[in-house]
Image 1 (cartoon, rainbow, N blue to C red):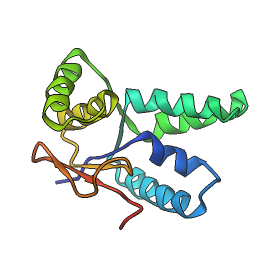
Image 2 (image 1 turned 60 degrees about the vertical axis):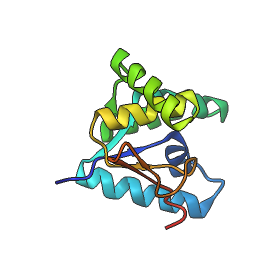
Image 3 (image 1 turned 90 degrees about the horizontal axis):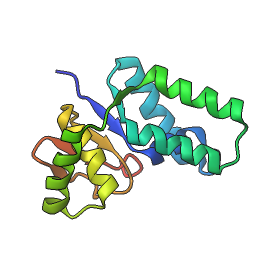
Image 4 (image 1 turned 180 degrees about the vertical axis):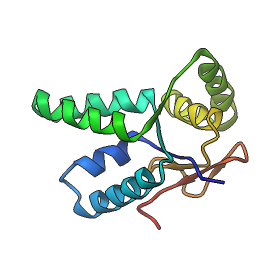
Length: 139
């Protein structure tokens, strides 16, 4: 069975950024491997956060559009529904993550993602016995 991989915003930002060459290379490698296997996911929240980061970096409108359409065309974008929000409430109480982090986790779990790539959580932590958090910069 294919692993469904979900990314958080910082992995996307590293893949398009130019500040940290090593992290950019790792992020781009993860994304290119998963795009090839057609198992790459982000939540609609991450999609919107990525747009916000791009605008704060003061990129040109055409460049932002190009990046947003690249993401749209290469990732499965998971919705944040009312059910996702209710699942996030449970996860927040159980794991004590920040609210927006629990929304990402809830979307991942609802959609049977098995790996979440992020540097913001505990490496190798398992959430709800189904989702493993991997910090790709530690492996």
